[in-house]
Length: 274
Ligand SMILES: [Zn+2]
Image 1 (cartoon, rainbow, N blue to C red):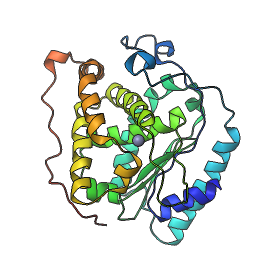
Image 2 (cartoon, rainbow, N blue to C red; image 1 turned 120 degrees about the vertical axis):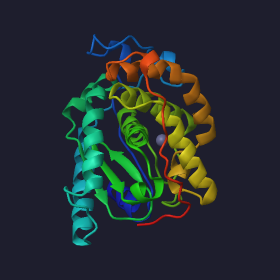
Image 3 (cartoon, protein in one colour; image 1 turned 45 degrees about the vertical axis):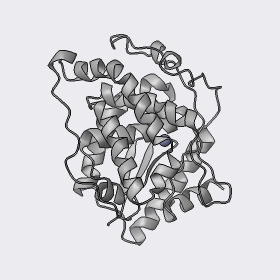
Image 4 (tube, rainbow, N blue to C red; image 1 turned 90 degrees about the horizontal axis):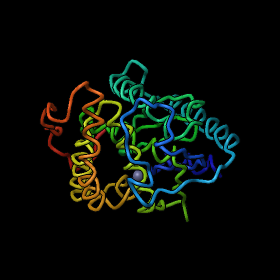
């Protein structure tokens, strides 16, 4: 079933993350030198501790599925080479994000992170249990994100996996969207990770505003799976003042010396392209 779901996730451009994890409070993180931040429950009352769920088997199954999907993409000559600038860009961002995932889930230290990009027009990205990230090239072509926005997007997907959110299918199509609580958690955790990794948290606003604009021009499947965009933008704006000091610290600056944020200047494309 898992493989079926993942396979369909690729073939019909629907993101899916199915994983159970043990969440550890950020305030109990091992990085004692990190600036004090409010715990997840303080940042968002929707975030509550998860029960420990044995997930070795799920991660192994996801890895097997991932290998099969990659092999299929290779056979179809759709898998971008490691030297492709899109793959290298995504990998570079992922490398910066990874160290800041541990404080949310100790188990992540065992994950073997990897990102692959498949040549598909539909803009989609998701993180599988175990740290394997699959992106469609449509993410790059259609969204036209700057690195800050891309980092926020990847961190959001990672956060869904860290938190053990599940997006499952009722009738395989259409996909069931994440709940409002899942989305709020993924934003809080993802934006925290991105800011600590040195990505501007103001990109979270421009990212979702951008996706909202694309979605208004032409309904976007990614926005369907990750709904509540207008609401999340309001909530992200409320938390920006908490995130900016984390970002400034990552740059060795203070909040007062941060440069103004510039969103991607590229005009939003309303139609997907390969
Ligand atoms: Zn989401």
